[in-house]
Amino acid sequence: MTMTDFIFPFFIFMVGVSVAFAYSKRLDEGVPKGGMYKKIITRAIKLFVLGIFLNLIPDFDFSNMRIAGVLQRISIVFLASSFLFLNVGWKKQAYLGGGILIFYWLCMTLIPTPDEGVVMLEPGRNLAAWIDRMFLPGRMWEVTWDPEGFFTTLPAIVTGILGLLAGRILLSVKGENLKSNYLMAIGLVLVLTGLLWAQVFPINKHLWTSSFTLITGGAGFIALGASYFVVDILGKKKGTSVGIIFGANAITVYVLADVLSLLFYTLEIGGQSLNMYFIDVFTGIGLPVNLVSMIYAILFVMLNFIPAYLLFKNKIFIKL
Image 1 (cartoon, one colour):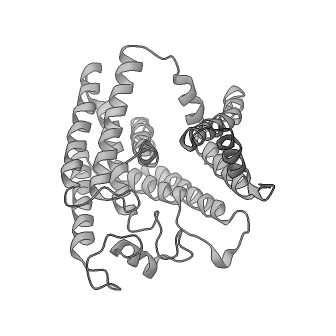
Image 2: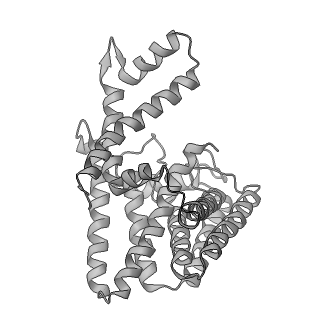
Image 3: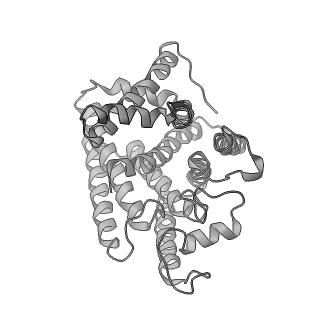
């Protein structure tokens, strides 16, 4: 695993945390559940449709449209997490999450892939890929499989549930140090459990395996607990403004980054895409490829920070 493997799971984990905070407040204010359900469903649909729209750029070829995607998975996790938070207690949420991970593990390791006749975990040849080919309409990310397919979204929902449970700790546990300690201790247990599970169900981001779910979810607990300790208990807030600025318009920044990335891959200079031209120029002066890649990533983040900062400075918050 690399650091980039934690980005998407952390985002989904924080969706669960945000749901716990947002709807706990609404429940305390006496907002009727019926009204909340309507807004939850509406927002989930908007996220899903936005994800499909991004998939259509730049050709808008509806005959070859990809249905699955990052925002689509986030919308499903948001919908499931919200309904669970409003209707199911935290213990049942935990049991359900564990049950889903065990069910997914058994399905993926005991049920032979129909096209293969044996149990497979290889890309495009596993049960999840087969289910998506049978039931997921539209084009796949790869020819025979999709990393954001519907079946692999099941364990991703558990990542959202872990976020709900982390949010509950922050909301209900008394004592600032105790909150931080609980989060980091639970996170450590989850990571260790995930590492043990990985011996029989390997860590795989594309399959969102049960071991991957526990390790990334546990890391989310630890990161949240450590951040709470440093920022809220010790009061060290230096540097947090960057995260606040990005987080204030997170979906907007994601959409912008997606569009910019597409532009950098499609626009050409001298027959090369912009990103490859950048890499060739800097590797041509003797810089290592890994260093150039890191420089490119940092500059790309800085480029996205500019509109995020301008939106934040002008108190413009774009929400679905």
